[in-house]
View 1 (tube, rainbow, N blue to C red):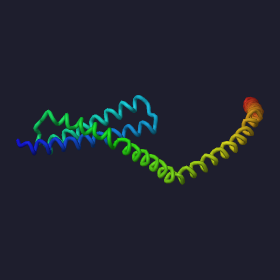
View 2: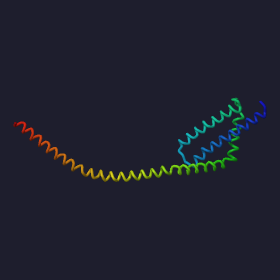
View 3: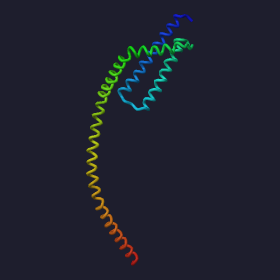
View 4: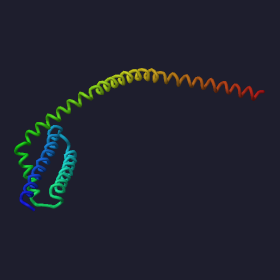
Length: 170
């Protein structure tokens, strides 16, 4: 293997390290803006681990033709460090702008649904008040209906008794 190919492979893995640092800054910016739970951090770390392992494995397969070299790990770490000392703060600012812009765009797109939801909630409150008044009147009527049903039952029983006595006499 020639020195020039090894140097180009080394530079390729430095760029892979920079790419992994950019992905890491994406997760870091999201954590800064959202204040997420510990469980979410663990899930994000697992996702980042799988992404970085995929990128490194793809780089080993494509750049080195599936042969392992010790210097690739040094190159990835070097790319990560170079990125963190040079471009990281600018990329984080860009990510913050993207997150804030996407939040505003999402709020703008969801505005009609929010308005419709507020109208539905107000209608539900009005309907609830209406049914509460109706139900109150209904529950005020329940004792009257019970008394009336007892009277009807007594009257019905009385008529049945009369019919039985007439049948018995006949």
